[in-house]
Image 1 (spheres, helix red, strand yellow):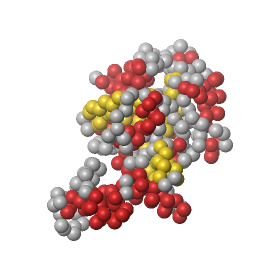
Image 2 (image 1 turned 60 degrees about the vertical axis):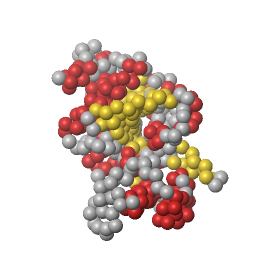
Image 3 (image 1 turned 45 degrees about the horizontal axis):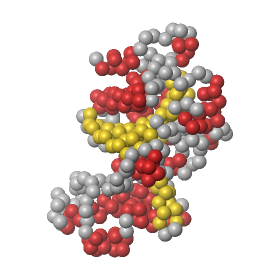
Image 4 (image 1 turned 135 degrees about the horizontal axis):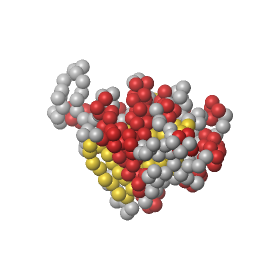
Length: 352
C-alpha cells in the first residue's frame, strides 16, 4: 500500500494495483520504468516493467505488471468473455516465457473466503481450473497438457492457520516449479472495480489492500517463482467520496463553460460526459464551487475525508451491488485464461 504523509500523519491509500500508483506520478520521469499500451477490440492492455528506482517511488516491488482494462467491455457477453480469456492467456503465456517457466509444473492457489462474495474470486477460480497432476503421476497426461495442481487454502478466520503456512507445507511436499496465486484486490479508483485484471511476477501480500497483515507469497518466502493474478472488488469509502466530489467539480466546470449536454439546466437525464478524464479546472472555480476544500490537492482531500470518516467508523470497504454476477463471470474468465495458458492443446483448439 502507498503511504501518503500529510500534516505529519501517515494515511494509507488502499490499492494493490501498480497502475493506480503510476497514474499519481504521470508527470514524473522514471529512470527504469517501461510502459507499453495496446488494444485488442475494446480491451486495453498495459505492460509495465518497474525497476528498483521506480519501485521506491511507486511503493511497488520491482518486476512485471500487466494490466487488462475491461472498462469498455461487457464481460457478461459470451463473445467478449472469450476474447478476454484469450487476452489473459496470451499475457500469462508471455510472462511464463519471460520467466522460463513454459511447460513447467504449476501450482494454482485460489486465495480468499468462498463465503464472502467480494473475496471469493480465488476459490471460484479453483472450481473451474483443469488439474492434471494425478494424470502426470500416472504417466497418462495427453500431449498438449502440462502438470497442474490446485487448491484453495481458505482464510485464517475459518481455518485458524496462516495461509502462508498451509501453502509452504504443500509446496515442500509436492514437486512443483512455480506458483500462480489468484486473489481479490483493493483499488484506489472506483473506475477499476471489477473492471481490471492485474498479472504480476512479484508475488502478493494477501489482504494488504484492506489493511490485513498476512505473510507475503513470493519467491523470497516460498523459494518458488510466484505469479499473482487479481481483480479489484472493493474500494474504501474515502475514495468513493473524494472521487464523487471530483466528478461533481468537473461537471460544474463543464456546465459553467457550456460544454455539457445539459448546460444551465436542471434535469434528471443521465449525465453522459466522461468525468473520469483529466480536466484542468481554474483554481478560482474550485474555490467558488467548493470553498477552501476545492483547492486542496487530491491526496489532501482524501486525507481530510479519511480523518472525518474513520473516527466515526464510516470508512468502509465497499463493493458494487452486482458483485455476485461479476465475480462469477470474472472467476470463469481467469480460470479459462489460466487453462488456455497452461494447456497448449486447449489454446490451439480455442484459436481455430
